[in-house]
Amino acid sequence: MSAILETRGLTRTFGAVVAANDLNVSIGQGEIVGVIGSNGAGKTTFINMVTGYLPPSSGDILFDGQSVIGRQPRDITRLGMARSFQVAQLFPKLTVLENALVSLVAAEGPQPSLFRPLDTPERRERADAIFAEFGVTRYRDALVSTVPQGARKLVDIAMALVSRPRMLLLDEPTSGVSSEEKFALMDTVIGVVRQHNVTVLFVEHDMEIVARYVTRLMAFYSGEIIADGPPRSVLGDARVQELVVGHHLDINAVLGAAA
Amino acid sequence: MSLRNCFSSPTEPALLLAAAVFAAGAWLMPAWLAFLLTLALAKALVVLGVVIQMRAGLVSFGQALFFCIGGYGVGLAAQYLGIGDAFALLALGTVAAILLALACGWLLTRYREIFYAMLTLALSMVLYGVLVKSSALGSTDGFNVVPPSFLGWVPEGDARKRTMYLLTVLVAAVVAIGFHRFMVSSLGRVTEAVRENEIRVDFLGISPQGVLFVNYVAAAGVSALGGGLTALASGHIDPDMAIWTTSGEFVFIAILGGTGHVAAPFIGAIVFSVIRTFAIQEAPHFWQMTLGVILLALILFLPKGLWSLVARDRKREVEA
Image 1 (spheres, rainbow over the protein chains, first blue to last red):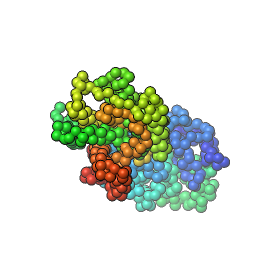
Image 2 (spheres, helix red, strand yellow):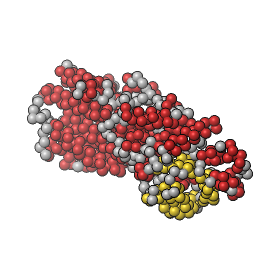
Image 3 (cartoon, rainbow over the protein chains, first blue to last red):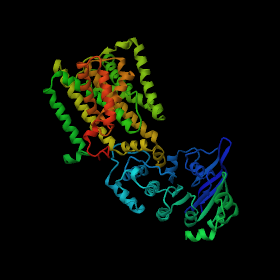
Image 4 (cartoon, helix red, strand yellow):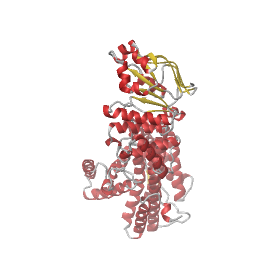
């Protein structure tokens, strides 16, 4: 399997704190990779560096064999790597439809047209198809600030996918979402990304979510990757249970619940 | 192509109708009112520049910079280049402002919030300082602008004032339609997205700075047009065109009118000019206080400006 994302010796320090320490990661095309770790383990720092939001102190990041060091987030998005955020990053005073229309305009090119209106029948049609895919059609004309958290998360992810990326990074996609909604949300998201053959890397705290959806799991602790492999072996690792999960995990129960 | 297809929304024929009514008034209204409206419409163009920046989440306390550049561009071209045609003079003033905006915008669009506001203010005060110290440009007195010709025609007396008024109405109508299209365009709506969440715009693949830069240059161009029309109508320019209180007045009018529609700055500017004229007439020593009280009342009772009285659907600021 060829690597779509590769990091070499990726390191980031904040003063004396080492948030990422010599990370060497290789993610293959089509993989669905989970990242777990306690608060401050370096998960979000890793995503922020990979997407160009945070420059690394040293090391290299290769996306599809091309170094993305020094590139702006918008340039990395244009290369085919999109992301969603822990707190949904939307345009709160615009409607859900307008949010989608802005994403569609962005997907068409880096310079929005001065002459073509934002709202066109073709873009509306595409937006409606996206809403149907993500099950948020009923919120179409609502202001984003009035939409429930779960739907907001879905809109956030849908906006990231509008540009048809080859890789999607999700930062805690189920945070702030009720336990009743979280599986439905992830079923929708994973269903869509599988359909479009998008490689996914997502940070998550919920072990049931991780066990259910990922094909590979990486455990971060103190800026380092302490385990990397299939979910069963990583979640069954004694060090991961001690340093990341914080308690003994009945791996069979977790995997059983997730199945 | 049918007439209906020429317009992108009902706003455009409404703007044209309003312009036709204003133009027809040229033969009905007294000269003083035509002059007052000429200056108000010219001012509205500058306010439009302030408004499109506000829609992007930025407040310019230095829009008088381009108002002044437009005015001095017209005055200097008339005096030193011997150009007499009003259209050519306005074009020169606008081009000068756009060139300056290309340089200033590169710097300013890197800043946000109070830093942007203060830097715009600083740049306008630099121009004010330069003009005040330039005796060749009339120093604090400024200088008079030669009455222009209009495509070779040189009207006299009331006809000149009426022609100037009609030119201003024409320019205002064209600019209003152009900026309405800008506001509903992809770029115009993305400026609102930048105001709402700049980080998201960046992660969608668009440069927020690039969007703000285009917005800034457009604002400069339209403000210079307003300055040029003011110079031609009043026949005089001076450094006070660039002073911070002039910029403050533009922000005042922007708040008065609101930012919800391209017509709002025009409503704001006309109401402001009428209130100020009557306030000066009725209470010459307290007219600033009158305006201050009105602004306070407006912020309390109509925070979205006078336009919110007109707009039926308050949820959506820009009609499709």
